[in-house]
Length: 267
Image (cartoon, rainbow, N blue to C red):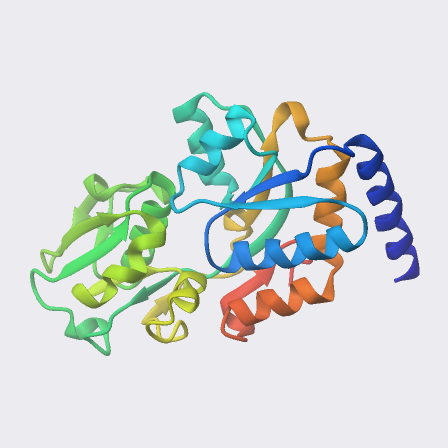
């Protein structure tokens, strides 16, 4: 622990020397990632590194802002999402460190089992390519649909090969899914957003994805041209080694170890 503390202090000293005038700006979305980043920013400031946490309400603007240089780092997306954004936006990003792996669930406030989902039932699902694919794979795991062979997590509603209950899909921006859950028969959901909204139990999903799937861990993402900024490394080290950050993450996931994993530790 003493060696870790010395290493963090050395990185912070380098980071402070590298950028005395400007704070490190990190973009997040409200919820678990924002709350953890805010605590880490407070910890970093106490050690001499100024960090500004910038909140965005959607999953598009944080990458636009990063590419434009308005922020230095963002913390809201997993690597498959980042790679898809790079293809669509022509960005040049780097996943500099893993963060939190959050579970994905299918929630219903009207039905207690998948057997109760009616013919023609309504399903809310993420509207971005990668997270929609994850939701569809979970629906397939639940036995409600079947996807075309080989589409994997990049599948869309157009790749549904079998839909025996004639489910009707509503595509929604990921952070907004929690708001529509009560209006549909079934909704894709993210426990950390549900905790933040406080509307229903995040541990009440009818099914969850496997938290061992590390490629979907939300990571710290920078531009390629600033991935070696010592301020970034210093902030990430504070984030990964602070007990206060760990405590906040646990709180953000309803104090349940079943709903998240610290991806940099693999447990």
